[in-house]
Image (cartoon, rainbow, N blue to C red; front, side, top):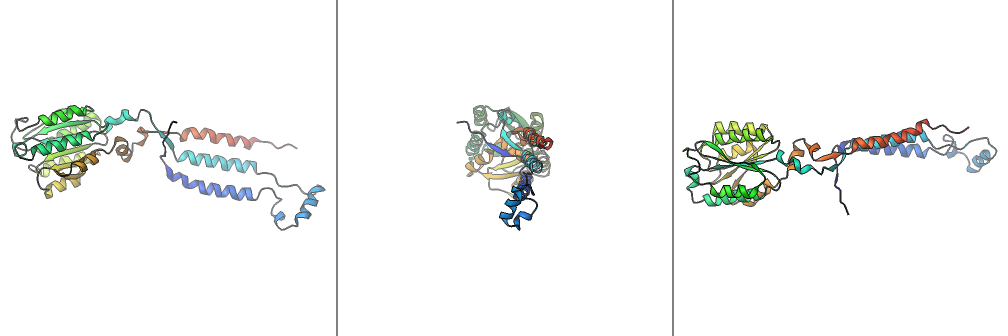
Length: 299
């Protein structure tokens, strides 16, 4: 049996339906009589007068009913009943993840470095259909892996990063964030994630400016802290609309990144990319009751 998920893109229009149903009930309750006399006249008298042709029974209000039925169909169409597009997964590239890994000596030579990389690999495994990429930085930033859905490659690349990967000494997270913004723009990402692996070194006003630019584009910026969380780390995550994760929160990071493309893009006002609106086709059915407006009763 084929299952079909239906959602309403504009459910607020459904508030019209109770009013239309109420109008229909009122109209039908008055049908079948001659005005309101049948409610106060003796039923036997009404039957006798009808038998000798003095009165005619009320007829069904065809035209008003047709208008109400048309209004009901239009109201349902306006709610935007929709089914998921078969090609929805082709839009997965609109929601990507970039892992920004601090490979400076202070981080890569720390005893917690293997745990940091393991957390990154777990984050990669939670991407589902979302593409991911890796940027490594120290004194400068470089693209280690471009956007790809080959998550095995991403995990292998993470495993190879060490203190010798970036030749530039220092820690300049603002350069990694600026490069992430450039890659997001080039890849056409509309609702992505940036995850910054850091010990907090180098964070300041320049990196905050880059976080603000990413957030303005609809990209969440989260941080994985290899050391106890600082106020600077919390500020960056709050500005970026993301979260802060410590090395003991691998599952929380995986759940955060498992947020699928459809959900993220619908929040970003791109539901049309994932749902096929059937409301426009229902308007054709609304034309059928209107044909009764041209109905002519026999003499």
